[in-house]
Length: 436
Image 1 (tube, rainbow, N blue to C red):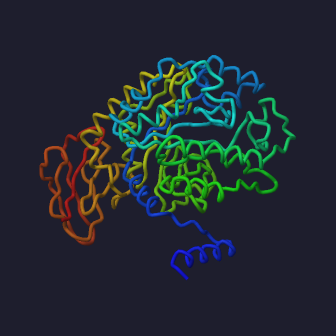
Image 2 (cartoon, rainbow, N blue to C red; image 1 turned 45 degrees about the vertical axis):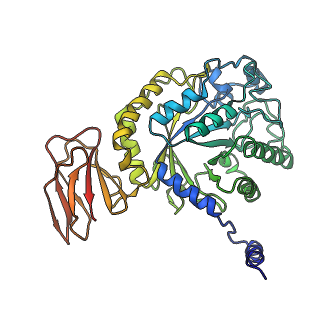
């Protein structure tokens, strides 16, 4: 028996036994490594819900008739949309990838899908394929494109009713047509992974819509995941289900939370951190989709500290922006991107391609590590000394900016104690520990 046949036979036996069967390809493992080193991505929640300027859940929260909501497509004309401007602004901020909402829970597709006329090309006067333009801009700029895809659809009759979408005018007693809806989704995913070049990841959302069913709902994820990996072996799969990863997933997602902290109120499984690459998604202001009254933007210093804490957990930060209905990124968001770019232009090497350091996020800051070099990020300005648990005295302890040697003491019992300058760089004073 050839090695290939033997591997196939073994895989089939494991499948029958009911154990985990997914074995990532070499391309996928390489993509995981690259993803882990990216550290910063930008999330873009954009669809016809931006027209109402009330956030991405407007249909669920405020509209009793889904067909009235759908009429917004006929007025959706984002004439100021320029994919290259978006991508350049995001790249200049130091982000390595973009995750774009190809289809949110309202069911509206932001590409020229052949599976439904309810899409940006056929249902709007704009008639441009946004996913195509973004993909071309990302490929040109060397930015990876990830695609968010909702498992939920509040608009379609064939989607089996879950715990959301019950106020949109659908028959709440309807059981839908799962086989038909499942084919619809997989046909759409095939389009996205066939017609738009290399896709970095598929970011699923909505599993939780059926987490209260009396009878456990079978999303048939294994077959869907296999389809994605068959179409693009390197494409990573993540699912925002707030549970420990399922077989076939390549990254673990934490929504509005750092890995292991479980402060966002989700199920206990959210605290279980796997060995997969990790990602924390968080909003730049309060909402995911554009809301005109939501001007509660995080300051640049707050974003930088969030990025440091996330990297200190060994995870990526996926920072969200909700584009405006005219196709522009909000001015405040662009300001934050520009300011963040100034910081990453200097301090990026202390984050990119690093792992979590010996001190996880704490009161004074966090640490990252690259090989034998430890980067100490001090974010609390009144910190006067810190201790790093090392078993051997390092070669040097210096400031990242300027390279000045810092006074430190070492003993095997207590580790390395560093005496900090009276005046610290804000919002992040970086110290380099060289253990070569």
